[in-house]
Image 1 (cartoon, rainbow, N blue to C red):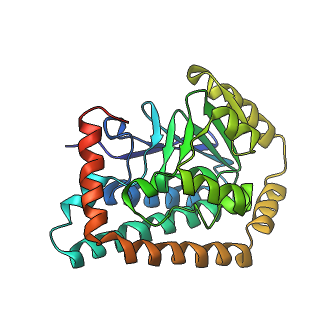
Image 2 (cartoon, rainbow, N blue to C red):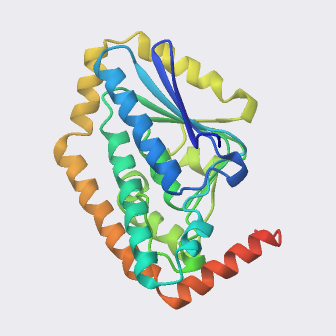
Length: 267
Protein backbone atom coordinates (compact mmCIF):
# COMPACT_ATOMS: atom_id res chain seq x y z
CA UNK A 1 0.00 0.00 0.00
CA UNK A 2 1.35 3.46 -0.86
CA UNK A 3 1.94 5.80 2.05
CA UNK A 4 -0.78 8.36 2.78
CA UNK A 5 0.03 11.79 1.30
CA UNK A 6 -1.12 13.48 4.53
CA UNK A 7 -0.77 12.21 8.08
CA UNK A 8 -2.81 13.47 11.01
CA UNK A 9 -2.84 12.48 14.65
CA UNK A 10 -4.03 13.80 17.99
CA UNK A 11 -1.04 14.45 20.23
CA UNK A 12 -2.51 15.24 23.64
CA UNK A 13 -4.55 18.39 23.03
CA UNK A 14 -2.93 19.17 19.67
CA UNK A 15 -3.89 17.93 16.21
CA UNK A 16 -0.80 17.57 14.06
CA UNK A 17 -1.33 17.47 10.30
CA UNK A 18 1.69 16.69 8.12
CA UNK A 19 2.14 16.83 4.35
CA UNK A 20 3.94 13.57 3.75
CA UNK A 21 5.19 13.30 0.16
CA UNK A 22 8.74 14.62 0.57
CA UNK A 23 10.00 12.89 -2.57
CA UNK A 24 7.68 15.22 -4.55
CA UNK A 25 8.34 18.22 -2.30
CA UNK A 26 4.73 17.83 -1.09
CA UNK A 27 3.47 19.20 -4.40
CA UNK A 28 -0.29 19.57 -4.62
CA UNK A 29 -2.34 17.02 -6.49
CA UNK A 30 -5.87 15.73 -5.89
CA UNK A 31 -4.93 12.82 -3.57
CA UNK A 32 -2.91 15.13 -1.30
CA UNK A 33 -5.48 17.93 -1.24
CA UNK A 34 -8.38 15.53 -0.70
CA UNK A 35 -6.53 13.86 2.18
CA UNK A 36 -5.69 17.29 3.63
CA UNK A 37 -9.33 18.37 3.44
CA UNK A 38 -10.39 15.24 5.31
CA UNK A 39 -7.69 15.74 7.95
CA UNK A 40 -8.82 19.31 8.56
CA UNK A 41 -12.38 18.04 8.93
CA UNK A 42 -11.27 15.58 11.61
CA UNK A 43 -9.33 18.33 13.36
CA UNK A 44 -12.41 20.54 13.36
CA UNK A 45 -14.53 17.76 14.84
CA UNK A 46 -11.95 17.19 17.60
CA UNK A 47 -11.80 20.91 18.31
CA UNK A 48 -15.57 21.10 18.46
CA UNK A 49 -15.57 18.26 20.98
CA UNK A 50 -13.11 20.18 23.13
CA UNK A 51 -10.30 17.61 22.88
CA UNK A 52 -8.02 19.76 20.69
CA UNK A 53 -6.69 23.19 21.65
CA UNK A 54 -4.62 23.88 18.50
CA UNK A 55 -3.75 22.56 15.05
CA UNK A 56 -0.14 22.36 13.84
CA UNK A 57 0.33 22.03 10.07
CA UNK A 58 3.77 20.86 8.97
CA UNK A 59 5.56 18.93 6.26
CA UNK A 60 8.09 16.17 5.84
CA UNK A 61 11.29 16.78 3.89
CA UNK A 62 13.11 19.94 2.95
CA UNK A 63 10.13 21.71 1.33
CA UNK A 64 6.81 22.73 2.80
CA UNK A 65 5.09 22.44 -0.59
CA UNK A 66 6.06 23.47 -4.10
CA UNK A 67 2.47 24.11 -5.18
CA UNK A 68 0.60 22.42 -7.99
CA UNK A 69 2.18 19.25 -9.39
CA UNK A 70 2.92 20.12 -13.03
CA UNK A 71 3.31 16.47 -14.01
CA UNK A 72 -0.29 15.87 -12.88
CA UNK A 73 -1.47 18.80 -15.02
CA UNK A 74 0.47 17.46 -18.00
CA UNK A 75 -1.07 14.01 -17.52
CA UNK A 76 -4.42 15.64 -18.34
CA UNK A 77 -3.17 17.85 -21.18
CA UNK A 78 -4.13 15.70 -24.18
CA UNK A 79 -7.46 17.49 -24.47
CA UNK A 80 -8.31 21.03 -23.27
CA UNK A 81 -11.58 19.88 -21.70
CA UNK A 82 -9.83 17.22 -19.61
CA UNK A 83 -7.18 19.66 -18.47
CA UNK A 84 -9.74 22.29 -17.51
CA UNK A 85 -11.81 19.70 -15.65
CA UNK A 86 -8.77 18.57 -13.67
CA UNK A 87 -7.77 22.15 -12.88
CA UNK A 88 -11.30 23.00 -11.84
CA UNK A 89 -11.37 20.16 -9.33
CA UNK A 90 -7.82 20.75 -8.09
CA UNK A 91 -8.09 24.50 -7.51
CA UNK A 92 -11.60 24.09 -6.16
CA UNK A 93 -10.33 21.59 -3.58
CA UNK A 94 -7.40 23.86 -2.71
CA UNK A 95 -9.82 26.74 -2.14
CA UNK A 96 -11.98 24.60 0.16
CA UNK A 97 -8.87 23.60 2.12
CA UNK A 98 -7.79 27.22 2.60
CA UNK A 99 -11.27 28.26 3.71
CA UNK A 100 -11.50 25.27 6.08
CA UNK A 101 -8.19 26.32 7.68
CA UNK A 102 -9.46 29.88 8.14
CA UNK A 103 -12.67 28.54 9.66
CA UNK A 104 -11.01 26.37 12.32
CA UNK A 105 -12.24 27.24 15.83
CA UNK A 106 -8.78 26.83 17.38
CA UNK A 107 -5.38 28.45 16.72
CA UNK A 108 -3.52 27.24 13.62
CA UNK A 109 0.28 27.08 13.57
CA UNK A 110 2.24 26.39 10.37
CA UNK A 111 5.73 24.85 10.53
CA UNK A 112 7.60 25.64 7.30
CA UNK A 113 10.86 23.70 6.75
CA UNK A 114 11.61 25.06 3.29
CA UNK A 115 10.14 26.17 -0.02
CA UNK A 116 6.58 27.44 -0.34
CA UNK A 117 5.69 28.09 -3.96
CA UNK A 118 2.60 28.55 -6.09
CA UNK A 119 -0.75 27.64 -4.59
CA UNK A 120 0.80 26.23 -1.42
CA UNK A 121 1.10 29.82 -0.20
CA UNK A 122 -2.50 29.69 1.00
CA UNK A 123 -1.71 26.90 3.47
CA UNK A 124 0.83 29.18 5.16
CA UNK A 125 -1.16 32.41 4.82
CA UNK A 126 -4.13 30.83 6.61
CA UNK A 127 -2.08 30.22 9.76
CA UNK A 128 -2.14 32.40 12.88
CA UNK A 129 1.56 31.82 13.55
CA UNK A 130 4.36 30.57 11.31
CA UNK A 131 7.69 29.03 12.30
CA UNK A 132 10.06 28.95 9.32
CA UNK A 133 13.52 27.55 8.80
CA UNK A 134 16.33 29.76 7.59
CA UNK A 135 16.09 28.03 4.19
CA UNK A 136 12.36 28.70 3.81
CA UNK A 137 11.15 31.02 1.09
CA UNK A 138 7.94 32.07 -0.65
CA UNK A 139 7.88 32.49 -4.43
CA UNK A 140 5.01 32.60 -6.97
CA UNK A 141 6.45 31.03 -10.17
CA UNK A 142 3.18 31.68 -12.06
CA UNK A 143 4.76 33.79 -14.79
CA UNK A 144 7.26 31.03 -15.50
CA UNK A 145 4.48 28.89 -17.01
CA UNK A 146 1.69 31.39 -17.67
CA UNK A 147 -0.66 30.33 -14.87
CA UNK A 148 -3.03 32.79 -13.24
CA UNK A 149 -2.23 33.16 -9.51
CA UNK A 150 -4.13 30.87 -7.17
CA UNK A 151 -3.88 29.68 -3.58
CA UNK A 152 -4.60 33.11 -2.13
CA UNK A 153 -1.83 35.10 -3.85
CA UNK A 154 -4.44 37.74 -4.75
CA UNK A 155 -7.10 36.77 -2.18
CA UNK A 156 -4.98 36.68 1.00
CA UNK A 157 -1.47 38.03 0.41
CA UNK A 158 -2.59 41.63 -0.29
CA UNK A 159 -4.34 41.59 3.10
CA UNK A 160 -1.00 40.80 4.73
CA UNK A 161 1.57 42.87 2.80
CA UNK A 162 -0.52 45.20 0.63
CA UNK A 163 -1.41 45.21 -3.08
CA UNK A 164 1.82 46.90 -4.24
CA UNK A 165 4.24 44.37 -2.73
CA UNK A 166 1.99 41.52 -3.90
CA UNK A 167 1.95 42.77 -7.48
CA UNK A 168 5.71 43.37 -7.45
CA UNK A 169 6.32 39.78 -6.37
CA UNK A 170 4.03 38.41 -9.07
CA UNK A 171 5.46 40.67 -11.78
CA UNK A 172 9.10 39.67 -11.23
CA UNK A 173 8.71 36.26 -9.58
CA UNK A 174 10.29 37.73 -6.44
CA UNK A 175 11.55 35.30 -3.83
CA UNK A 176 10.80 36.21 -0.21
CA UNK A 177 13.59 34.56 1.75
CA UNK A 178 13.17 33.73 5.43
CA UNK A 179 14.43 37.13 6.62
CA UNK A 180 11.99 38.87 4.30
CA UNK A 181 9.15 36.63 5.46
CA UNK A 182 9.86 37.69 9.03
CA UNK A 183 10.24 41.37 8.13
CA UNK A 184 6.89 41.31 6.30
CA UNK A 185 5.18 39.58 9.21
CA UNK A 186 4.58 36.38 7.21
CA UNK A 187 6.77 34.38 9.60
CA UNK A 188 6.78 34.87 13.37
CA UNK A 189 9.99 32.92 14.01
CA UNK A 190 12.94 32.05 11.79
CA UNK A 191 15.76 29.73 12.79
CA UNK A 192 17.48 26.40 12.14
CA UNK A 193 15.38 23.59 10.75
CA UNK A 194 16.17 21.32 13.69
CA UNK A 195 14.85 24.00 16.05
CA UNK A 196 11.45 24.52 14.45
CA UNK A 197 9.58 22.84 17.28
CA UNK A 198 10.99 25.17 19.94
CA UNK A 199 8.76 28.16 19.13
CA UNK A 200 5.84 25.81 18.54
CA UNK A 201 6.18 24.44 22.07
CA UNK A 202 6.30 27.98 23.45
CA UNK A 203 3.24 29.05 21.48
CA UNK A 204 1.30 25.97 22.54
CA UNK A 205 2.15 26.69 26.18
CA UNK A 206 0.80 30.20 25.74
CA UNK A 207 -2.37 28.89 24.11
CA UNK A 208 -2.95 26.44 26.95
CA UNK A 209 -2.72 29.28 29.47
CA UNK A 210 -5.67 31.07 27.84
CA UNK A 211 -9.40 30.46 28.03
CA UNK A 212 -10.44 28.15 25.17
CA UNK A 213 -13.69 30.10 24.82
CA UNK A 214 -11.81 33.38 24.47
CA UNK A 215 -9.54 31.99 21.75
CA UNK A 216 -12.46 30.45 19.87
CA UNK A 217 -14.39 33.71 20.06
CA UNK A 218 -11.41 35.76 18.93
CA UNK A 219 -10.81 33.56 15.89
CA UNK A 220 -14.51 33.58 15.03
CA UNK A 221 -14.58 37.39 15.22
CA UNK A 222 -11.42 37.85 13.15
CA UNK A 223 -12.49 35.25 10.59
CA UNK A 224 -16.20 36.00 10.73
CA UNK A 225 -18.59 35.00 7.97
CA UNK A 226 -18.31 38.31 6.14
CA UNK A 227 -14.50 38.15 6.01
CA UNK A 228 -14.43 34.47 5.01
CA UNK A 229 -17.09 35.09 2.35
CA UNK A 230 -14.96 37.93 0.96
CA UNK A 231 -11.92 35.64 0.76
CA UNK A 232 -14.07 32.91 -0.78
CA UNK A 233 -15.21 35.32 -3.49
CA UNK A 234 -11.61 36.29 -4.25
CA UNK A 235 -10.50 32.63 -4.30
CA UNK A 236 -13.28 31.81 -6.74
CA UNK A 237 -12.09 34.67 -8.95
CA UNK A 238 -8.61 33.11 -8.86
CA UNK A 239 -10.07 29.74 -9.86
CA UNK A 240 -11.96 31.21 -12.81
CA UNK A 241 -8.86 33.04 -14.01
CA UNK A 242 -6.80 29.88 -13.63
CA UNK A 243 -9.29 27.94 -15.77
CA UNK A 244 -9.23 30.65 -18.43
CA UNK A 245 -5.48 30.18 -18.95
CA UNK A 246 -4.67 26.55 -18.13
CA UNK A 247 -5.49 24.98 -21.51
CA UNK A 248 -3.68 27.60 -23.61
CA UNK A 249 -1.17 25.74 -25.84
CA UNK A 250 1.54 28.21 -24.82
CA UNK A 251 0.92 27.38 -21.14
CA UNK A 252 1.08 23.64 -21.81
CA UNK A 253 4.34 24.08 -23.72
CA UNK A 254 5.76 26.21 -20.88
CA UNK A 255 4.81 23.52 -18.34
CA UNK A 256 6.67 20.92 -20.38
CA UNK A 257 9.75 23.14 -20.60
CA UNK A 258 9.65 23.86 -16.87
CA UNK A 259 9.36 20.15 -15.96
CA UNK A 260 12.21 19.34 -18.36
CA UNK A 261 14.39 21.99 -16.72
CA UNK A 262 13.69 20.50 -13.28
CA UNK A 263 14.64 17.05 -14.51
CA UNK A 264 17.85 18.50 -15.91
CA UNK A 265 18.64 19.90 -12.47
CA UNK A 266 18.09 23.56 -13.29
CA UNK A 267 16.14 25.74 -10.80
